[in-house]
Image (cartoon, rainbow, N blue to C red; front, side):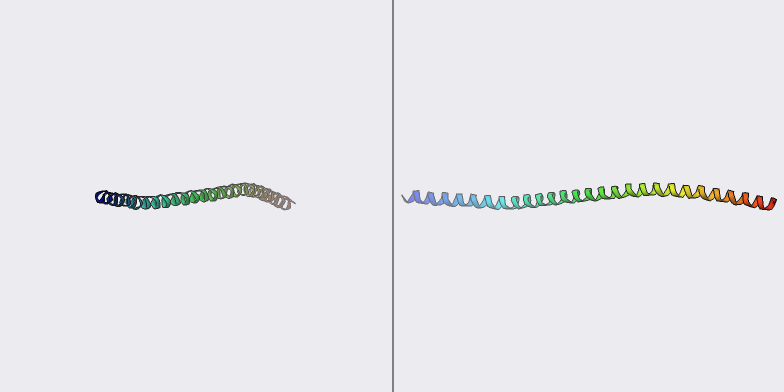
Length: 99
């Protein structure tokens, strides 16, 4: 009987050491998985935020290009108007010097 009790005690200690070994091996792995997943989620969020910011920048750039086109048309109109005024001045000078 005594031999059986000793074997049971040895087996219990062996199982406890396996459980301890499991926890010693599993917890660092679980913690590293948690932090890896946390880092991946954080990076995904950062990429999403950067994508949204890039979209806003593109929209701003498009509106600035459209505004630039409108301003370019106005500048061209003013340039044409300036040329027309210069031609009228020259004609007026010619008429006043001829008269």
